[in-house]
Image 1: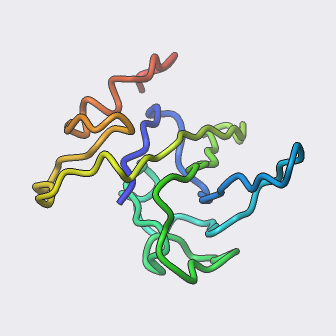
Image 2 (image 1 turned 135 degrees about the horizontal axis):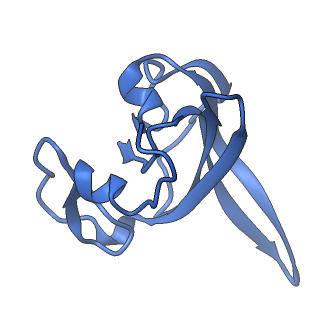
Length: 129
């Protein structure tokens, strides 16, 4: 489950999971999962499940195995006026607590348990409407 911070003027339009592959001095990125077209207002507002068919309408790359300990989540956004942008963050699964999170709780990439409000408060939105 991902709680992505997003400003009110934007909606999530797609997401992907990638990892970095290192071969000597050369590195490339491999997509483990990607999808587009939020299926609900909750997904459009930034709450979605990686690999779940009910989060996005169009699956680009299906998730075929368990996610690794660390991966990069990229999210595509679109504004009300059609401006597109993308942001992302590194996810470190080694910081997960041993007991499940409660409803409405999310984990930062540093292991801190936070609320959805805390997630959204990390952004400085230009237009709060």
